[in-house]
Length: 283
Image (cartoon, rainbow, N blue to C red; front, side, top):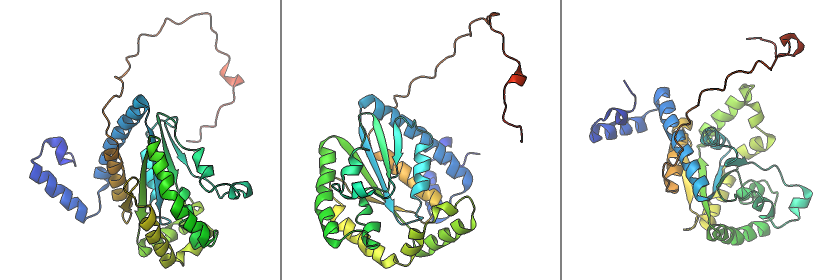
């Protein structure tokens, strides 16, 4: 039996009750993967619509360390064409970039027609980590708060769709995820000295985020907060919301039918297999 009552034509009240039940508990894996697959198919439809209509889309991901931004980004992009949807995760600025207008190094990564750009952290570094860790002055922060809303309005006026997500997580859950990264050889690289130092500045980051929202949560480019306490739920909620932000239609091409192959030619002789170097069959 399907885990999704909608797939079975269940009455609306049963569907609503099932949704409420899932909200109270953790998502079971079978439902999560079924729903993720469905949403990723919709993302492909959105991608094709963006290509067809020449839309320009920017999606900004910000939030606490270990709040789940990276996992959500992976699930959004894994089914999409990297030529259409690309992720921008910039390293620390160089000395030359430090001398530029602050927004300058981000501009070259903005989308052209038919493209989606996902920023894994963005120009909001100035209002967050740079400010809290002392990498910029309060005068530079004040200038950022003056410039940022107008910068984003300029993007919107130019025809770029700007969507901003803030991933929120409790300090207890963040600490648990930090410990998991320390103890997992496949995840330890996700934890940096900066993360460890920022761990002791929870309140400072909270104040910085509150002031950032005060100046940059605008009508043109509002912040959408994602409850990241449970990763799977956060991913589904974020993808579902993203799909509602851009009206789209299903313009995915019909499946291609493969014609019969041309008859093989006897003119080609394959070189002996032992003249090629194969990857060892370990598995």
